[in-house]
Length: 253
Image (cartoon, rainbow, N blue to C red; front, side, top):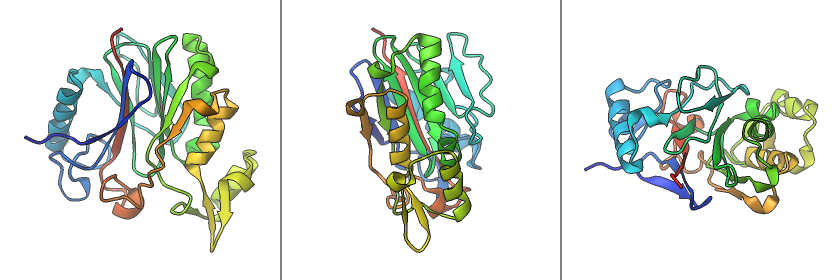
């Protein structure tokens, strides 16, 4: 029997946090094998079968597996018991409902998971370079404070697999966007033949700027471009390929 192979994160005993790999599903070709994203061109049947596998592994129903249609902006949706939030054009989700798996899709962009153990609330964030420039991670921490009363120093964060400094070669226009947004470029970029930007480090710095303790931040340090045999990479496989799903579930307590 097929079973997805997940990369699990040891965030806290009260949550299940993970990123999917390419292994263990029904998709084929550049979507092979495990993809649950409906917006990248994979077949409906493969997605249905893969979602069923993941739900079985997590012991949840299909309607408890929630993912948005991301657009590289900073819209954040709060998912409650009714689960009737509009998830079109959303790049981060948060919830305090136990048993719901919220998550985001990436294929070189940076997934970030947050957990507030005091209020038992979680957040999943899609931080591509555009979202990073617009400080989506800082906005998500602020939103958790607003909605759940979270204190940033209580929040635990996990940065998942994504493109590394070595692999993220950018044009001057991208470098300039980070510069104009006020980032310390000496700490997140290097000039080689072209500019290279460290997206995981930039998001780590944003977490600390938002008040998350450095000791509470973990970084997977896995480059999707260098490890495209295990994790989907749009730079290696093209846009019409599968996506990593990075999710988090609040356990009943």
